[in-house]
Image (cartoon, rainbow, N blue to C red; front, top):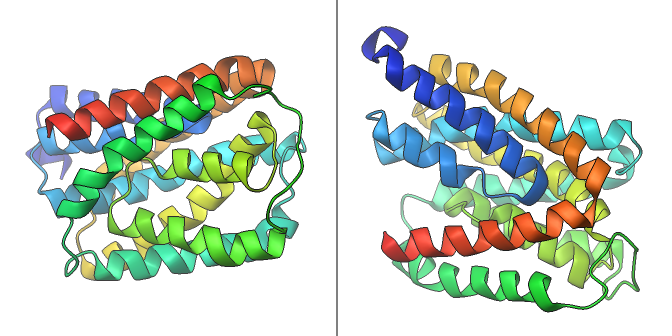
Length: 251
């Protein structure tokens, strides 16, 4: 596949992957950068989605490892929720070809704006945990697979939806919510990728190349997020949601 692309397009994809990993490790929304880059490079929409899932695995894994190594997420305790995220995304990807996507295009921008407003104006939005509104069991059973399913069907804004759910329902502080979001996003990426790989719509060479760049970008982003906490995560999340909503409206 490398031989079919001009050098400047390969460089574009590499830079897009690094930036996507950086943004995604902090606030989600990395696909806002990588999917358009893949489309610009000449990939069909389904190839772009499948290849994006492959390279996104590297970034989500990098951020998850970084957060877990500093004790911000207990991988073993979160494993059941990760399995539910995987299953939801696999089912979503399997149904993506038969479900109409127009209603998602119409509904997503207002939902992203609501998330941006919530994080922008909610008081006490910091790294301190609050009272949980759902038990971990119910959260993993009711919320996680639904968001995972959405990631398999469509994808943009998945990290933002996980973030909102962790803060509003699980009572997590912003940094802890970010760390746990990356693990569940890794699982949903893996579920979606499993189906796309089975369907044969993944460009492996480009995906792995972008994945290496995504891994580095996510490592840098996660390090900055852990250093600065809510001071960095909150404004970047708000900006990412607004930009993603605008882009979807323009599309």
